[in-house]
Image (tube, rainbow, N blue to C red; front, top):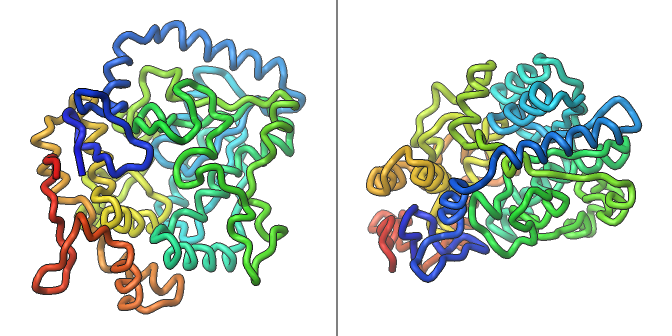
Amino acid sequence: MKYCKKCLQPDTRQGIKFNEEGVCYACLYEEEKKNIDWEAREKELKEIAEWAKKTAKGAYHCVIGVSGGKDSTFQAIYVKEKLGLNVLLVNCEPDDMTEIGRYNIENLVNKGFDIIKMRPNPQITRKLIKRSLFTYGNIMKPTEYPLWASAYIIADKFDIPLIIQGENIALTLGVTNLGLGNDGNALNVNEGNTLAGGNASDWIDEDINLNQLYMYQFPDKKRLMAKGIKAIFLQYYTREWSQVYNADFSIARGLIGRATESLYDLGRYRRYSSLDSNIHIVNQMLKYYKLGFGFATDEACYDIREGRISREEAIWLVNEYDGKCGEKYIKEFCDYIDIAVDEFWKVVDKFVNKELFKKDENGKWIPKFKVGENM
């Protein structure tokens, strides 16, 4: 495993690429941002907004998929207040919606928005999450399909001309093989994350047919383009966008985080991410055992690039929190998919990267690697 020389991005992330000096593309983009003509980009964004107002056939100018978290709260309020668009929010509700998540969605809607809430059949969701654990060692994979498809489905059905997404991970994470492009076009968003161009048919089996997976299917892109529907990444056009800025912006407008929970249980050192579901916390631990990094690494990389902490400070934070997950979240997840905790750990054992981890005398997986040092 090799690390970026500037941040702590490891080469185990799918699609990551370093330059000849060993610097990841996300760090290179952070440098490029200093030379971006943000006034020109803001002008382009306003032109897109005016186009949406003139093109809209109904009441709504754009669709934004929201969880009520820091990023989607920033998106929705920025687009409403700064661009003057009439926004239709779409919330694809997770099966294990937290009370914090419910509060934050209501807080956002009460800022003056219409919303459509979608929730895939919970019996099917549970089956798919269980299957995904045993097949991929990734319990979020099936939930990504309706999460990302929902805004596009609604835009298609209501003929709303514009879909506004948050960040383009090709830029902010530096991944290069996902077909997203290094621009503001978000029409190919389903090529990113864990979807990799997947379709609802990926989840068909003897018990689940395609008609039961409607919410898991992205609309046909050719049809969207024929209708003139556009999708953009707001992060590409806005100088303000960052994890910390979005959190501060949203907290000032009523967002609440996981204030009473241990950071060691959360596996991260900030309290304002993944607020609507606890499954993500378990999945980040799984990612850690598979790839050698979890969510604390992602947080640290953002902070290094944006000048909030040094690489040395980040190494301490990653060593302290990365890969951690509270037993209560693991037990909660096992009860949700109806397996014993012992069985869960047996599945985890199969997916642990044995090149990166070894078992200690107590049978616990510990890293062979040192954070920030190539091996």
